[in-house]
Picture (cartoon, rainbow, N blue to C red):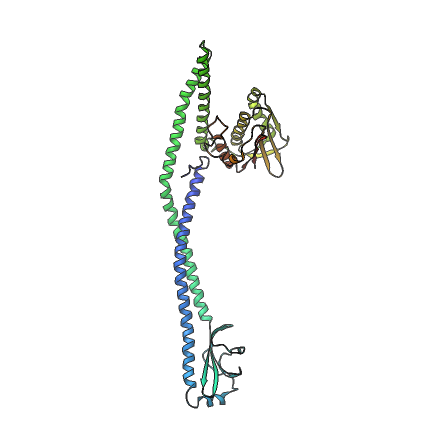
Length: 406
């Protein structure tokens, strides 16, 4: 599992918890929906076939009666009479081969278009079965119709039951999945907490011996020792300093959640804020003969967590100075509907193929012989905490610009 962001560990665990719950719920709902859907379709087809079967049986019963001796003569006497009474919602219609209505019984059906087609059809609110009957010298079409309101009501009830089943299944699966996923995540959270405690303890334990080493090297540097020893002491001092910075970044990475948990948003004047930062980094820039400039309107304000933003910009400015050999580093801010703070340098730039990886934890550009690869990953996490986004614009040989957009 990818290590969770320290800055948003509670949010990350909660998001993972809810994601697993959602996956479990959707899986159960999908299975139930497929099975219940199949049952629904089978039952719907069954009641439709039953309904159609009743129409066919009625038509066959009438066909037998029409085949009785003298029945056609009796029907001819009834031709032109108003539709006879039958149970409400049922209709019987006899058509001559010419399409003329010969006799109607019950509800009145529409006269079909010629030629008359046998089989089932739906006409308005009626399901109609049409059958061709040969009666010796006469061919007629028998049409038996029945109101489908009851059939539709039964289908609606089936659909309602299906949807209710899905809703109750989803609710039950969510509750069950919520507790199951919480139990499943518990060992992961415990392991993560143990790793976090270990990292914090290890970083604290390393700080003391590193401080002792650095102090000892500072003392030895001014002692009368051979040049060869001085060179080795210088190498040791650089590596101790490098390790000290790595330990500090590890501590920041581990403790950032606790360090900034009580910070609140405040409205800050960016010009004043950036001047403080530039003043702190001025000696480091001067040591490399770099110009460190500010570009910011006097009246530009932003509401954010000041201490978090300070750490972000300190990392960006430090990197800009570190990798810029000549030219300048510009720290600025503009507003074009959204406030953008940027750190721009005239360094070597970042290769295009490496720009997507630059914010990955422990990733270092091939030209970078220093650093731990943690600085920009910390920057990205802190920027996310500020509910902003960080954008890199860089071209080899022309420098880089890191933008924080609020």
